[in-house]
Image (cartoon, helix red, strand yellow):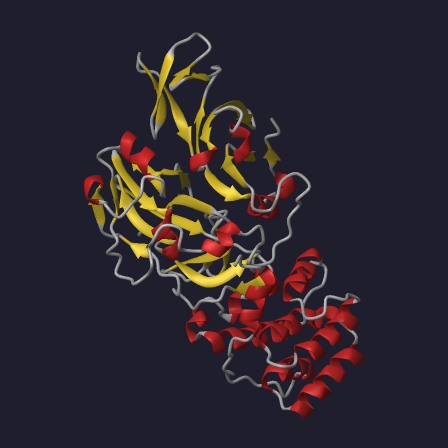
Length: 455
């Protein structure tokens, strides 16, 4: 049965929350918003009357947290939220989260910070490393605290793979030729990371071809992005994990040195000590393709072993099967679906001071697209059946494909490699980093700041 957003939300509403100590005697608003989770029936009733008479929607974000995790009190909480916000969403947590995203002018009451900390630390006390009060002030964050959502797992509940075991291609008999892999080649070091394994881990930290990198795979937004982790001014490469938190249906990863939270989609720190560091992780090229195609073009590749140190069902099509087969999102995010459906795939590039996306279905009519981003001419080579796109700078050339051969406007042949297009006379055109993504993530995070290929 396909996974629906309502079904998943309902499961989370029933999740147990253990109270953490907190003093609310001096703040009647804090006492009122705590009452649905931690108060007696009398305290809860008085709290809801107080908030309704107070009449300010600044408590709706906190009540939204209460409604998500309370048992048996959601209806009464929703009545108060409906009245304060002038909406009629009832107990629909998903719609309330979208309303919250649409209304950034509503600044939450200051009690949201201690209350939401209390709730989240009741789920996992290890969340404290991400939620230090000194980093949660509105002006110190790059995202809105009220929109950070618990993703259903604890810190490192989705464990990263750090320098995992690899196999030569000939020994990877567990893989089927049509299994999709992330293919990476850096300085001649060529590796494959099957999506059927990475879906359970969503992150690896590796050194490939002498370059420290991390693959940040957000299954919810369909994007696997390869980042360099050696950052100018820092002594050691950053090492990343999955925090257990989401922002607009995108994972918030964290670095293990400072425990700052990072936007997986942009490679920027958004909460914590590194917020004002100016760091933006550099992307490296990565491609999704079938194991059969990758192995044929890279016979000396190495590939992830099943011996990851974790017990998971790494079978084909197992991880997130319901989500990947559904048109629905599991967590809320606003998206413009006038041009594309929210889970249509696009190929995304953010380079050269610009951002542009190419719908994957644009490659169904032709496998070669000559285009540009900003003032940089590009050629993109795609195969939607394998979810494969590679992009290269093309200079003044125009390319076409005849059979399996890539030709320029003069009829000269070029060879496609993981680092560049190569001509027989030694001329090369460099590869440009990009990644596959669901449309909703691209539209939600970049929106009007980006352009989209229209054919």
